[in-house]
Image (tube, rainbow, N blue to C red):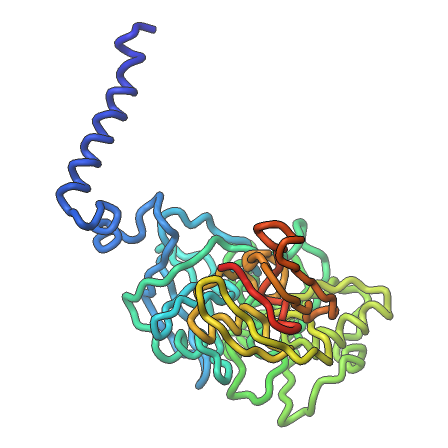
Length: 369
């Protein structure tokens, strides 16, 4: 190869760098990326974002958001979740929602959100988000996915918004040219019939023979006792089981299946926490904010309540996206009560790494953020 050929890529890089410097100078005090963020925010090679293209109400307190992701979106496996960052009253907050879409020719993705009481992000997304709005997104994650190959028999147990990862599974399974040979029973629990997300779609799957649907409504049938599964699902022991819903239901299901020697895969939207917690304390952030926090409030939530911008992810202690240094003081792990103590001068200049989503103050403490 000649030296001229070797020099060509180097000269091309040099030309691009010179053009970049000229473009940056032309838009000073901004830089070229600032301008591109306005006109082409979904381009490759930048912070991953999504544009809301549709907000579709599902029930009185839930909605599906259809999102056009940036070009660096890597796709997902049905059942996985998505981290979403939105700016609420000037503070960027991150939450995690299951992906609910099936295959789409337009490349869009969707999440379905149920507004919870006092939920800053869920309330915003259901009632205030608008078409055209840009939001931050992360790549899909999560292990609540079906095995490959599929089992012969499957049991799905969902309650409330716990249907969201499962609807994504079903939409992808039954979009195939040839329906999969799998026997599915879905036990779906809700407080009332009107509150059931995807009610009509699930019934359509049942009528098409894709699954056996067992609907349970608390106001009609009473609270589900997991012991009833033996009657509702006579071949329970033959089915690989997946469940998603409130912690109480999942705890009961896990105990039930463990006692019978059965496998169960669960997806939780909240961490499993102790019944009793400590007294809490004052949380000081290196950025200057201070908040008094009780012993049951995660440091992540306490910080967000006073406008501290903190990294986060799953918010249940799984992904380690919320790790920050504890520089001084003590915190308590809400899952098991374990105390972590950082003593200035003894724990090193960076402190001790803790997960802020599942640790609460156990006295005065300082967090570096």
